[in-house]
Length: 248
Image (cartoon, rainbow, N blue to C red; front, side, top):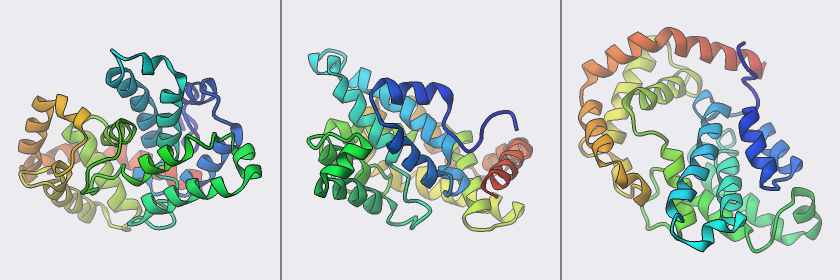
């Protein structure tokens, strides 16, 4: 393997530790994420953590609030924790992880062990609760907007197909042919003309109007989707096998 598949990127660990995020919380996140399906594994969480820091800078660029390191810290912890319960229950993972975060408020010992600041915990829990593309209500704060937008990642057809294909292979147990069909169909449902992802797209994503319009058009073209998957399938399958090996 070219890198540690079942761990966070070294640069991401530097970000987390630089924000005073405790080793115990990072370890908790790690031991849960390593049990996730391949579409919600360390590479995805790495991207969301990095993107949360980038989007925080944009969101607070003209505000003194961005100079407060707690802004970066809150969204980084939420990004770190947002998919920790995927392996428990995919449909309710946002609720489970948010509840775990809130439960820490009941114990000073737990807060100390995980290095959590009581005033930050409800904000972080809400970010986790509201991060999903299927969230159909208004998001509660700019923090939630940042984390949800970071979770969307780059609105680009190949990456969207990659994650959907790998989810089909790993979580649904589909063979290569079925995973290809699943990915193309799922991308239409999620990112096509009437895709559910657009219902409550985070406001920070709306700055990328050209990317959104291109993705909407490309998602409707299943022939294009099949072609992209065929071109990239060898590399995706290699990664899929690496994750399986790391989990075993």
